[in-house]
Image (cartoon, rainbow, N blue to C red):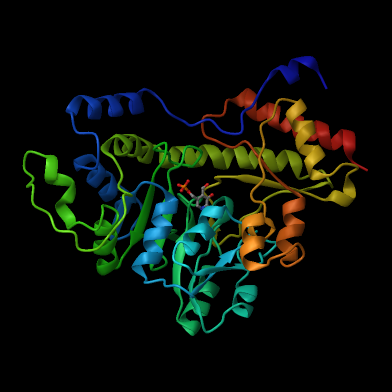
Length: 390
Ligand SMILES: Cc1ncc(COP(=O)(O)O)c(C=O)c1O
């Protein structure tokens, strides 16, 4: 280790924001209209055009998007929903809002995504929905999932929190299934600080989502305080307060215009990492099969623990000592106390996910990374590997 190298600190994430975002947000502030309005609808139109979906409905988070999507397909108490165990709790918690049960499915070690064969084993007469999660931006086996869904009459709601922009067999994620949920959370590939989007080609779903995101009030509810609006409204259903804001949309429009450039930057970082790490026997670098593309939201490095004298946690501590912020995606949900308590899951239930979790770590990868930061990550990872390899 050299002292000069250690002085560089690389955070796990830093949003790629500049003067264009500052200007766009300032314009909205000066306009006097902050919440959902014309900017939000412009962002929805641009997003739908970018993805290639008929509709895009902006909401306050991806969690809200998943909740509203499940509401749109009529999830009810006692229903079951297939969810990969390797995901963020948001994917499963929304299922519990309905008194329905998240049924955890093991993962395919090649992609770290939901294993369609294990999903099939877990289908029962109560299964209503499957939520594939494109972990790190790598698309799931969507053909197999669509076949499974057709065979068992399941709705497919994609959790694309990591998958902007990713594609499967030449089609953008967001155009493949009945409903797809995206996240614009602070660390995501497009950020509006907080926020989410649902894409769908289904007219009826789009109308329902537009109404339910704003208290279940008829479509023009957002206008009721504007000059052209009316004070009169009707509550069609008790809905939710999940709307987007024009402040967020201003950020989103600028970020969307930069989305391709930011993706290329992440692709290049991933390629540099992989070419540096591939020669070490202790690493398994992430790969994407040729029929799909990844957003490279995350770079998940896997360790061959039999080639190392330290475990994953110690590896992370060693990187922290070298100034690197890292993370782990994800602690399998069936190991979390809340899901164990409620549904009786225990350690050992989903062995592939547990094994991969114990040897995974996520490295910094974001479009604003400076060259010296990328070089520092490569140096730190190789230094730890050299020191602790068997
Ligand atoms: C896979 C996955 N799904 C859903 C979410 C929830 O996104 P949001 O924070 O926008 O609600 C996240 C957030 O990190 C996520 O990683």
